Image (cartoon, rainbow, N blue to C red; front, side, top):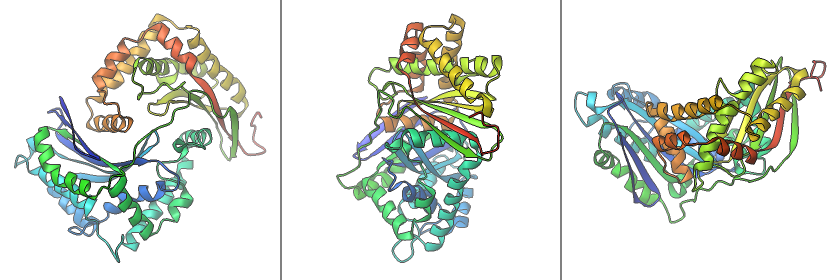
Length: 435
């Protein structure tokens, strides 16, 4: 596997992963901009409108026919949040040229279609078609509204909204339901123009083609975007607080049969973007030991041994310096479960874990990194994260760093982690909430 990063044009960069591991190649384009409450919804709508039609292929059915020519390829909208950066664009998959009837044709055609969709959307009266805007906007309003249906994810969403309500990280990648519902065709068009002028464009390819071949196929797109950009391509930053900002418990009541308990922690500023990644590697191992695996302390003690939770796990947001714990709890066990979750963290701070537990956590992190190398989609996701964070570290490098984490480093980084905000989803009045 050969990874090449090209930065010849200001405001545009390209990562090429040359490998023969996969039969399908991936090609993605992402506009990277600071995540803001005022612009998130309109920005999120843009890639869905770009997918609806172009000057050359004005309907989705015509685009689909073109994708069929690429042996059943796909090119879909992608809206993601990396730290405090909103990433909006298109991600495509198509048969690798090594397996196509005409070598080199698929990459060339896919790159041309990507350029057509990004730069030449179908228009009406100088902006996006009203019909397309109304249809895609309503779908995204429904998607935002539907977030409440998955109570586990909803609890984490609400936790981060409350914990980071004065920070850009508290904004959802799709924006709010109210903001999305208010986006007009003109507002979406203005958001699109702003992305072309001020966003950084990040391109990614994974397949058998060389960096030179990929750069040649995408050069027209890169030069066209660079020509549209002005000198004010927005700088990507992400604030990470060393200490807790809230120190509060938020309680929300709904008609639910099972309570949800979510805890948000600050990692003391430890995150992937730090120059010395030793603490970050230790944080990832600590997270695996704490609640990131099926042999973690939260799973084995809080769930299995004490039966205080239906599930309990932890996860780290690598660019923000935030760790969250997610759990499903009987209403009457909220206080006990919360205390035990905190006690397990305290145990790690005190070095109360076996060598076997430490080695299991280390290997779990190493295996996550190594297995990601075997997935085109996960390679693309990792590349986008490191591009946003401004730290170009490979998955094998991260695996090697995790292997070297010591017991003292795990305990030390655990002592940096401090509770910030607690979110509890409980039943409505009349249910046994244990409050």
